[in-house]
Image (cartoon, rainbow over all chains, first blue to last red; front, side, top):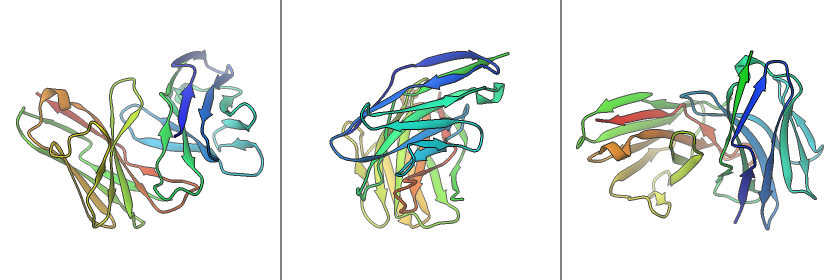
Length: 115
Length: 116
């Protein structure tokens, strides 16, 4: 079985400051890793993913995440946040080779950006 | 990109009524769809996995007679909350799989269900 731990339930941050959201996972098999963002009263949108190759992955809106196999982590960072980044962020994993397409989610981190 | 449409976005109804929520994959065929429930400030709780043409697989603790799932076609799955009560009030989210492991699920925008 897989489990995902997001260590920070809430992260308040000032506009233009950096932010880091921590994600650790536990799995006995290899997994794909994802970060999803959820804006108020909306579904989830894929922010970025790690499948293979370079351990540093980037999104189009300035977020990046780094896969660290030895630490089983996939932390999300942004060097300078905007008010519009206020949202809920979920880390998730899926098992490589699984045909059920299931995702295991972390508990989520609420990011609140203040002016 | 893959689009999943969920309808209605919000519904308010009286206790005891049944409510149907639709989930459609608009530009791809979804052999597998998922239904989640999300409580305020909480993560997504998987309720059931729906495969086209077969019975849904429910997670432990989810009442299958309470939450009826139908996946009649490759583009449509429905969740019916039967005889809804206030404790069923929640945010329900569906997702659909296009069969790509690199993006296992595409999510709908959710349905806010409020039972009075």
